[in-house]
Amino acid sequence: MASLPVACALPSKLKPSVFVSKASSKKRNKSVAPVARLIGPAVFEASKLKVLSLGVDERRHPGSWPRTYTLTHSDITSKLTLAISQTINNSQLEGWYNRLQRDEVVAEWRKVKGKMTLQVHCHISGGHFLLGLCARLRFFIFYKELPVVLKAFVHGDGNLLNNYPELQEALVWVYFHSNIPEFNRVESWGPLQKAVGRSSADGGTNRESSISNWELPEPCQGTCNCCFPPMSSIPWSQKLPHENENHGTQESFQQQI
Image (tube, rainbow, N blue to C red; front, top):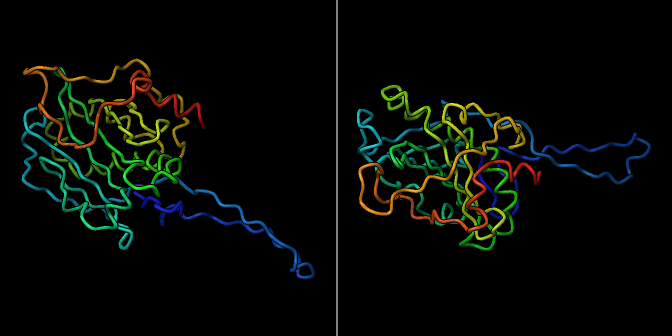
């Protein structure tokens, strides 16, 4: 997962490719205009993933035992760290740089009305004005990198998925959190096995992967046996503005790009 910008600078893994149209040696004094673009699809490299198992057991089904993922990226080593635990691993998020950069992705398995879901959360903007300045770019990068994130979850927690292959059919719901309404939304990425197979190169433009017939899962209001855990371990609000609640698909973003 590429590091995200805090001052509208492109991250290390998505450095701009600069093309300069050079004049002949006789016309070297002519001005040139560099053109920057994001290059290449995001690629998951298992060798760069470090997995921390903190008090969890792959023999326990997440439908009856809390299971949370905390994924962070190091600009220094270009490696990913995935903590698998019962709650968010706050030690990964400590330090002024992490609090400013906010490039972590956190997720949890939740059973909602008897059906398993993987709910993924990304912080786009809010909490620091610099994040707001780069909200559109951050949204694009998170969107592009999400297949890598999901592959890291699947690879890092492979024993769980081998023991409970039905989890591959669980729906993936991605929450983008932002103080800017345009980027504050939730999207369905379909069953996990299909979401992992999405190409990051399309930037969300592949309409064949869009989903429009699944409703955002809402847990029961009172005590029940069909929803677990009873309280989310993700501290970010999971209630979106009313105008976004009925647009839990990728199509709204596709139309913008």
